[in-house]
View (cartoon, rainbow, N blue to C red):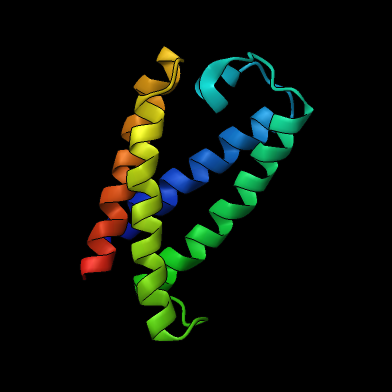
Length: 123
């Protein structure tokens, strides 16, 4: 249960953050390589897509935790492992960012998401 709550809370916080980027707030140093304080149009679209992906991720996490039953069990079981792998990959990508704020903030966030999904996948 704790892994589910942690993962969902972080995804919600990331969705709010990405929404703020879409709205043009000067937080770009924390995302997309940190090259733009205010994101240009293409990256704002990317942030909007991220919000939609976070919603899908939340459904997968809820399914893996047994709180939803939208997907067949086999699909859900594979999906949570794929999601865990996605977040593990994100650790490396964020750690390699040229943006120090992105490295310092997003790397631990993604590491916690990866750990939470691994806990759910192993459960």
